[in-house]
Length: 382
Image (cartoon, one colour):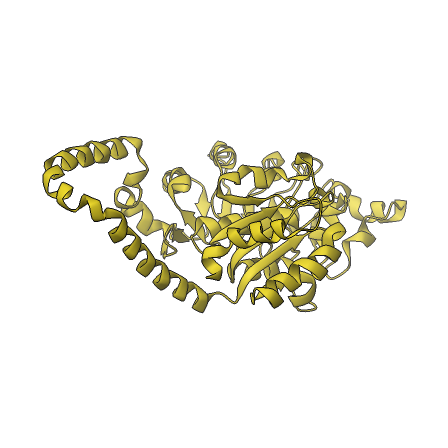
């Protein structure tokens, strides 16, 4: 069944349904399942007695929560080499699952809902394969690291030494993170911050007299250090990044982005811009192309319009931008709201609003909009 477009399987034809009803093993690799699911194809409902299912290499990054409602007999599920950023909640409906393969995706952590479900599977044997994912070792995922070495779930790496990225971008492994848990995550504890705050207050009063002598020059010194540090950082980023800006937009704003925004950024402001319709190679996996382009960009600009909520790849772009921002590789996430109302802004953007610079575009084409956008990027343009 591999290599055939999934839409052919989803035809409402009795003969097709009868062919699938008694299948216990199915290999569905490279059938564009990711696009099929987004278009409403419910192919899993055609496999009521399936026990072994391989849907690897399908550019999937999303599954509906009810995707496996009719697959109660499923024991082996292979979803490796896709674009998942987390373990789909849909797998919690599989009460007989014995093997789950999610190798070589973009999974950064295992959320609490999935962790609780996995622990409930014990003492029934369940194997979980996660090699090839680079997890996130930050304050937000410290509970996942604890769970990883406490759970009795069997993994493809017996020592549980999966790749793990720190906040500063350094890649270690989860075994090292667990052994050095206190050193890596002690700053996450609010009590520790309270102790640091008390220490700073005491130190302030102890050194108040000598500090008073140079206090009048504090801003000059601070600004000088900041400028030096900023130049070093920006020089390194310019060397690393292929693009200055990655542009994300819906189809209804394509004309304005291509004919107005792109020339302003590239021709007037001399920036290197990545536009998917123009710069992605033909035949290249779109999820990989998006992930690579955002990782090689200094900034991401989202242009929000009426069709934004229906843009099938927008959620994935937002998720990749959030990941790069958390890893300190992405400098700015800028949202141009245009003429769209609040209801057009995707929920995923609202969740990271504190990390976003909003640019409200005027109804009339004036220089005010361009000036606001330029100011949003000013430090990177100077």
